[in-house]
Image (cartoon, rainbow, N blue to C red; front, side, top):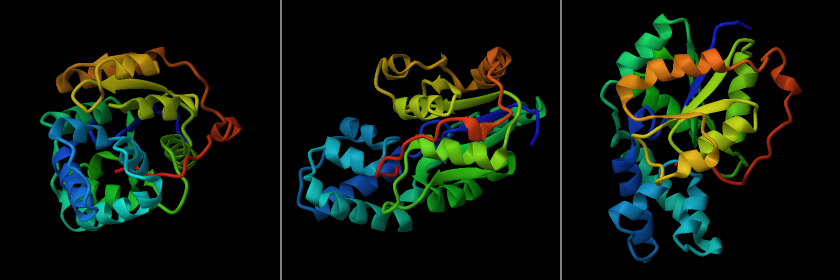
Length: 240
């Protein structure tokens, strides 16, 4: 355990612009199933939420959701996960946070088997104390359970903060007694983060370090016993 501050970072829409690969994978799934293709603006809603929930949102019948997920994963595993890029300025912000004594880890609804290699390929891994993601689709998971797993593994006793771009990040963090700072360059709908109760919204990547350090300075919740927090409920889905 350490008293150093810990920041849990979402991946898609926070550190990386993963929309091209996620959208391409979704198009493959809709085409394979003979369903109408959503337009680009609609497909942006695929980034962040659990994948099966996203297909349900687009009226895929519940009985065909596993088929849709399988088609999506087939393309994503080979090609889509690499149709991705780190947002300009993110490495510099991560460097500044590390230099300020902040521990960093990724906590993402994306399956961990994809999140780890993505962080390695795109140069994020050296900044991180860990990469925590969902299990694959047959095992129940939610953003709250991912955050809980990160806290259990890292065992922080200092301030803890989540940084993410969607309401799921805010609610998953709160289920574990952690506040969340939102970022405006991701995939949230207008007003989504504020409605979810985010602590603050950062408009520009270059302002991330200052906003995170300010939020950590206001965080006074004791982290001495993470195991004492209520265990968050799992949802039967994982992310993109």
